[in-house]
Length: 156
Image (cartoon, rainbow, N blue to C red; front, side):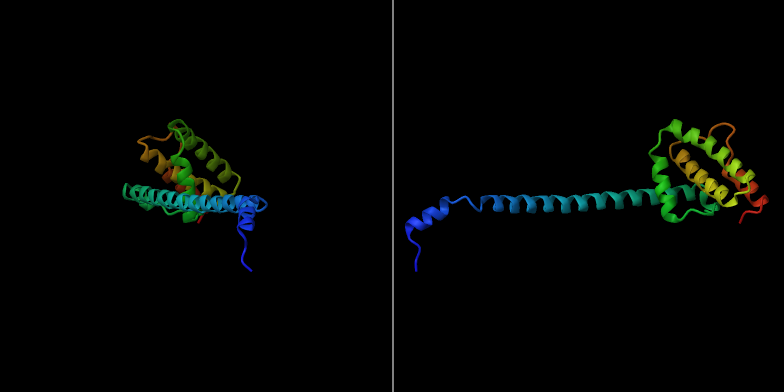
């Protein structure tokens, strides 16, 4: 049975399924935008990781290669360096002193594991300072000084 012209016109003007069609189109658009956003964010994260890797390698060439991290994994090092690189010059300089103080406090308490973490953080802070053409706060310890105290205290 063939639909009549009257039935076709009635179906054409019937809006009972219009809301469903609207939701399908909106859902597809939202999904497409979400997936394209994931691609953009992923690209940015990969690029940032590459830049951090280049910065760390450059710092190693500049003299930081003699330092071997005691407690921080490579992923933790990259994450922390990214945070330090986003800080203001004033914050970086102030951090060098506070990290030295925290290192001494944990070393004096006998917590060698945490002292090693503070020493690792101070190395990353120094890398960020050098990358920005800055020097540590006057009176803050160098990483070499920290390492000497750490090893004298029995750290490994």
